[in-house]
Image (cartoon, rainbow, N blue to C red; front, side, top):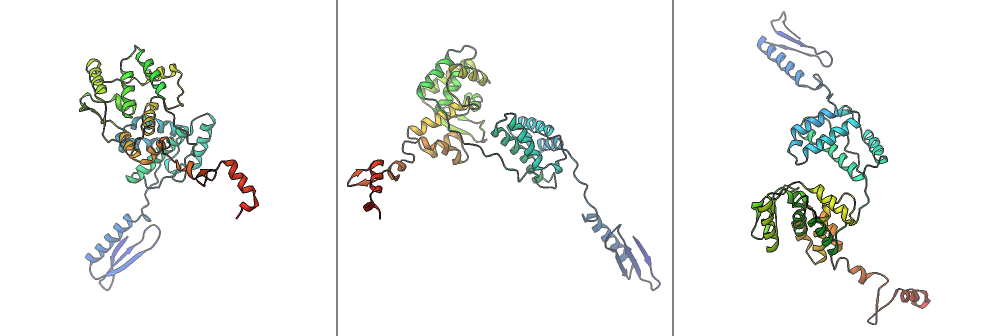
Length: 350
């Protein structure tokens, strides 16, 4: 860059970057020439084409750490999620974040499936990894889009929900009452069965929130408080228990051991969640409203609650009344054999 005075008294500015367009212009005064040179210099510095930003060379583990510092620490399961993500990054050989590809993730997923890792677990890990890139891009921490945005989760076979019968409930509660190691599991189980709350929500129950014939759960998965009515008898038992033994402690493992010892059939991975399914299932079978159940369970989406709809006494009853093997003729119902016989006669055809 240069500014020089010409023979005619004007000032000449010549700005030439390393490559690209050259800027040359004449001015009547030196002040104008200096301002023009300064303006061109500033634009060249700001222009990405002339002043390219260095490529992000942070590896996946560094991005996971940054995600936790900026956002992950605010999540209720943030620490656990970070541990999963860090292990996943190492299994992927810790590539540069911007160079990670969907094929790398899919290949690792195939290897883990062959080792017996559950499909739901793999889908959760993919979701966690996608969330890292989405959040960092949203915060402006990275300048490239999610490299995994086109990777689809595994399509899983929907499993039928399992729940305990009244006889099963009696067996389970009797086994819990006979266990002397901890006084808390029997009471927690009863509160779960009476309210549909998650085991962890009951464990964190504040004794001061058991009042006026209800319990209020403040430490919920959705971060929203829920107040559920309970019977006067259960309220009295719960208050007495908390006054005598203090706040509930973490005792889920004790519950799991007792459950396994009863030999009750519970699908793998449900354990204490079977109590929540049992409440919801019996609620619907006894004629409860699906929208009321959604509020009790604290589901943000009705889709989750609809899993229990098939247990309703009148759910899809029209399938019995309107299916093609059931018809009304002169006030009587034709059997399947009758329908088949009618169709076999030529005169019966239109």
